Length: 112
Length: 326
Image (cartoon, rainbow over all chains, first blue to last red; front, side, top):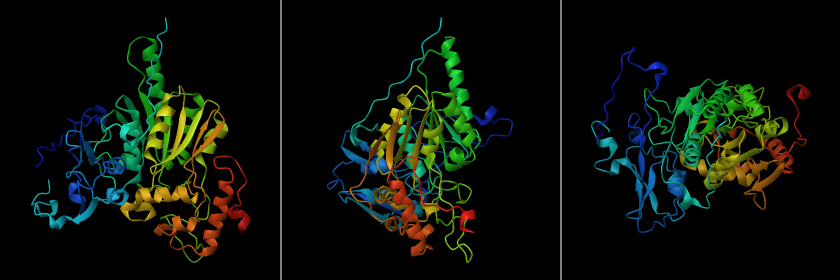
C-alpha cells in the first residue's frame, strides 16, 4: 500500500548533526494505522460539519474536503483513540471493530 | 545602517472554522493513543504556521516523535537537552537578530518556540527558561503540562498534583496518599520575577480556539512570553484514551485548572464556570487517584478552594510541609 522504502544508512552516511528532511503532508516513516482495534465510522448524513473531530484529533487524521463538503478520515495513521467519537455532538461517529472490515489492517498479511 | 527587524503578525481567529486546515505537525508519530501533549503540539503548530523554529527539550514530545531518521514536523525542529531549552532558543534568536542587522537575512523573524514539558521547564530546565525570559529574547516558552515525567515511565515532577500515584510516589502503608507534596505554580514563578515578560497565559486542550489565540498573542509580543498548557496524559493519569478532552474540560469545571491571561499586570479569566464542581468528580475518573481516602480528597479540596479565591495570584494556601507534619 505504501511505496515508502526505509533506507538504513551506514554510520558514515548519516549527515552531520543527523539532519533529516522534514515531511510535507504525512510522515511515512512511522505509520500508526496498524495500532488500532476499533475505527470511527462516519455517517455523512448526520454530520453537521462542526469540525470537532478535526480540531480534537491528536494525530490530525480528520480533515474537511472542501469540494464534497465531507469530513475525510486518514486510515493510514488513525490510532483508534476514539476522542472524535467521544467529542462528536451530533453522534454521527460510531466505533466499529477493525475485524468487521474485510480489508481492515488486522487482516492484511503486511499491515501497510 | 541598521536594518529593521520584520516580525510576523498572526491574526486572531474567531471560531473553529477559521482554524487553518493545513497541518504542520503531520500524522505519523509514536505518541500514545489519545495523547494530550500531541494535541497541544498540533494546535500550537497550527497557530504558529510554517515560518517557525521549534525546539524540543527532552521529554515525551521529543522521544515519542522522533522515530529513527524521520520526524513529524513540517518546519525546522531541533532537539535540545532537557536542561537548556531556553538557552538554545536565546542563541537562535540572537543569531537571527545579528543576521538581520548585517543584512544577511532579509525575511521575517521566524517564530521561535520552545516546547518543553513540565520537567524541561520548571524542574530540570528552570535555569535556562528563567535566563531566556530574563534576557528578553523574542521567543515563546511553552510548558505543556502532563504532570509527570511521562517519557521515562511516569515519575513524579513538581507539577504532579497532591496524592497522585506515580512510580516514584507509590501509595503504601507508611504513606497512604502517594505524593505528599503540593505542586508548584509555574505562571506565578514567571510573573513574579521576570520584568521583561509582558504576557503569561494558561490554556487547555479543551478550548482549542482559545489556545491558538493565546499562542498567537504571545508570539505577536516583541519579547519573551510564557504559556502553561494543560495536556491530559491517558497513560500517566490512567484513564481511557477517548476521555482526554473530557478530562481537560472537567479540570476547568472543578477548578483544578483555571484559564487566565496576565497581560502587563492585568488578569483576565476565561471559561470560569458559575459554580465549581467538587474535585472528587475529576479525581474519580483517573486511576492515579484511586487509593485516596475521603480525608485526602478533603485536603485537596481545601487547597483548590484556597487557590480559587484568586487564581494566578500569590495567596496563602493551607499546606503543611513534610517537616511541619512530622
